[in-house]
Length: 317
Image (cartoon, rainbow, N blue to C red; front, top):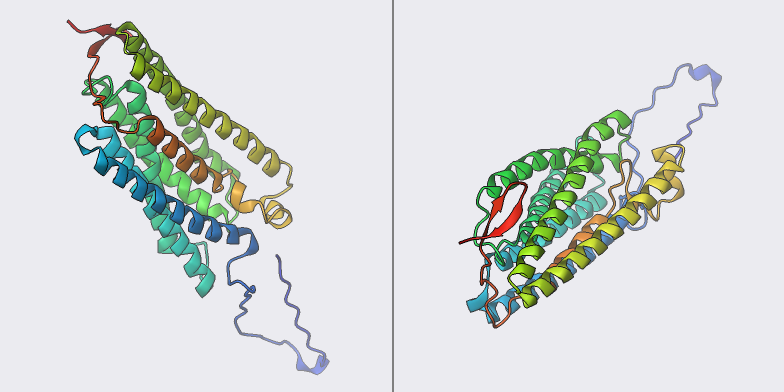
């Protein structure tokens, strides 16, 4: 909460009084403010969860070593980066809780590192969803000309994501001007919307190729993947609307932190940036692992095709 310090000099003969010193406020559990303490507990939970995911996935892949595809190794790498991110953020908040260091500004190096690792997880994960939608590793052995478009998107999005993550982290302690939040947040939102349209367009094209080639087993996989992705998007939109509603109904960002401090770590500040996004990502990663888990039967029987016009698939001769 907010603390007031009152000093009184009762002797009028003292004149002007100068007071020097340092005030430290420590809660029973440490120096972290109440609205941020949830981050510490959440990232401890996420560390254990990611550790279990990594161990399970690596052990499972080791059993299916002969039928592994590049996408399976990609999933393993993302799970490991997710584990590193959770450990980094937990260490950062635990260090602040123990030492009482300022969260902002400047931000502690551990938090900056956590933001960079978060981007290193976020961008490749979104690229992975796009690659799977394109059928990479399942329908197409290579991306061809699409590789250049994917790399361009990843490069631009990485720059925007780094700026956005730093602003989100700073907003937990420092009031960020709305114009600055919108300047970075709106381009990220537009890029996410463009990516969603791109992903579902690619999924439609890939499923059309599989239906044309009567690849029933793979078609069933991509139908489940489409359903899982649609569920993820619905959850993301629902939570975004709730977060915007909660924040919008608070006169100021500071009042929102004080009144609903127990929920703050879930929703975040302005723009919304709570831990729910990390939870949704981990859940989607697990779903993708389950849908496209390696099997004893090789899945890489490519239904080769080339792109014509606006991305319509055509069976290669």
